[in-house]
Length: 496
Image (cartoon, rainbow, N blue to C red; front, side, top):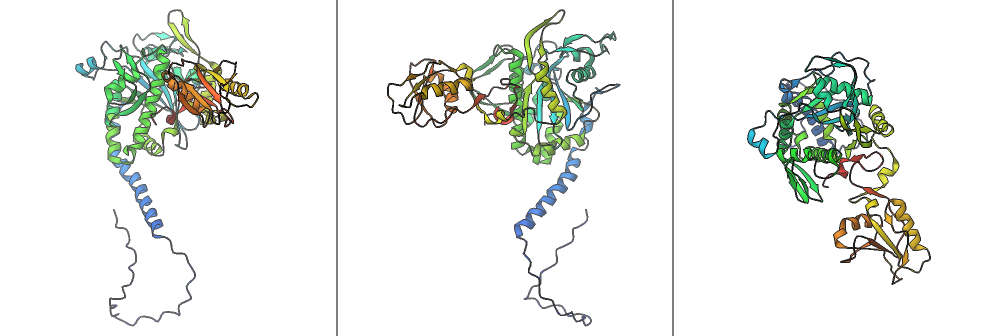
């Protein structure tokens, strides 16, 4: 690398100038100096530092990642594909999680309940959209039990030629591999897939371990006898095997696969936060180690290589949890039974199209103004029963508060009453300590209200409207999947 030119030396008045070998020409009479602002020293340092960073990113980035292409197992999911959707803006990656477990040792397979033969099908299917300006990531989960119609294809096992027929989405991989999976997803969504990335159990565990674990939090116990997951309420830093149990658990509650996808979204948001806040993406050597650990056990299309990794790495340097958004394709009715297939999930055509059109246009998944105004709360207002009392002598205040809470979604009694004491200056939320999460959700809708625990009050919360009451603030549940399109940002589902 050539040595950069030195800055001109400033003259030292204590040193005697060297004698010239010949008379120097007489300089012209100096002009009066023009008034100029001296550039602050910190500006020059900042410019120099940024220049070094840019050069390092361009040079060192390719150097440390060179050769990683050889570590990626390749697959051609786009072979002979015709009549594909029109390309949009940004980049769409079909992220497929398979149940591959062949490279996991026997002890770990027993510890994390990974016994049995793999089904060679997809356990997770997601479209990851990176915006064209690389400032936003949108993740759309496609339920594995979604009712799907395949295009005509050849069965990769039997070699039999099939016409298009119905099946569950995760069965497309078993029947036609990555190519049929991509074709089926494109047919269902009309979103063109640019890259294909396949992750198995082993690569998932390596990814979590190499970033040092991922923190998740839960306000209730999560126990699933099938996956072995058993987490007490609170914060937990999960390593590879425990993280796999967390994202695979399907029997924690009655939500089954839909609840599992919500936990996967929680985990991805936490993983983004870990990667962007730990310095991994700013350290070329650590970035190389992470990518090498991950790419050693994934499969990707031929076009997904070092250049794409650098683009993603640079993009994610500007990411924060609020830069990512997550949703699950809305379904009309769970349990759509199809003869020969069983129970499936049929998509809500209108709401699903809203999501896929946003991906095609490279727009945020949710652009409704009210979504940003509503405050996230831990309990759905529909599950909170409220009795309103007027704690002032203002006529009709109780009815006004009751109506406003009902309009926001709370299950009010619609029978407001007068409080025993009618000179309350401050609005009070009285609650039984066993329903403290509901009380916090209700208090969030009443800015400035006072929480007051009353043992033995029972499940119905009481609002005593005071003279300070102004309005009811809009709230909505934290749990992704609720709301019109179920879109949440990463900062709304992480532990922060």
